[in-house]
Image 1 (cartoon, helix red, strand yellow):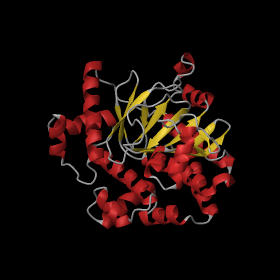
Image 2 (cartoon, one colour; image 1 turned 60 degrees about the vertical axis):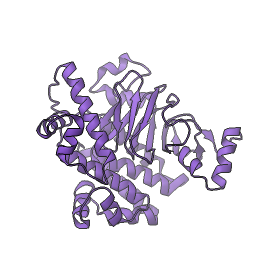
Image 3 (tube, helix red, strand yellow; image 1 turned 180 degrees about the horizontal axis):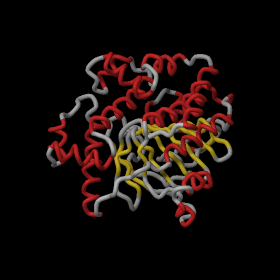
Image 4 (tube, rainbow, N blue to C red; image 1 turned 90 degrees about the horizontal axis):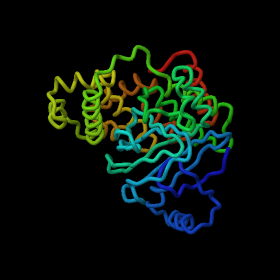
Length: 346
């Protein structure tokens, strides 16, 4: 387990400055932290695990902290799990909406820009892996990975299921609780299961339309995701959403389902529930969280949360806030890792 470190560069996955660093920028951040500055809290990362090329860290950046848009090149091979919706534009690729239903993929040296969706800025957890581990995971279904050394990730992102999202939250929660006492064998096994769950392709992928049509459809999908991420507290109707993206409600519903493999309603529910998972973990009260993510009633929210994550929201809220027995955190993580060995996530 590595020591806690502080990041002073603009993007997740950049090289850390150790907590003992005495450079002028770290000294400024330290002074701001000592007086409880919101700016320092918003612009620093915390490394929770750093061993054998595997790294786990939390990244937070407020809208007014540093150049929000411009970022330094990534210095790890990482999976990023957004807590908030934000537009990410990889150099040479089309911009995409990074939200809790996606894991963003970054090769070392990747340059990108960030554009705000939420007034809360950008918040995520990232998981770093050695290049060889990424290539090994991809090779079984993507042999061409060996033709692009140094660039194992060919895509900018992958869709993730609520179950996979919960796994990365449990890994992070376990590390937050255990600190230096974390079982490295358990953590690393769980991280490799996470990598596999994110990168494995879905069976029976539908035939894609021609390139020009595909580009237009994807642009509509990204705009729809962005609008839904902006309007969790004041949900748009399907007609309003369709008008905003320039389609009929029927056409938008069809295109979204064909492109994502799920209905707009199912996507919106996943986004709401993943957002709720984070807000409960941040200490917001359950009834207020249910209202803020667009659920009309407490019972409806509780039932949907349990169907999605296999745990009631009050239990998750208590688990993340009261820091119960350390063994409980390990048992919860281990049970999900074991389950994912034998049954494939979406």
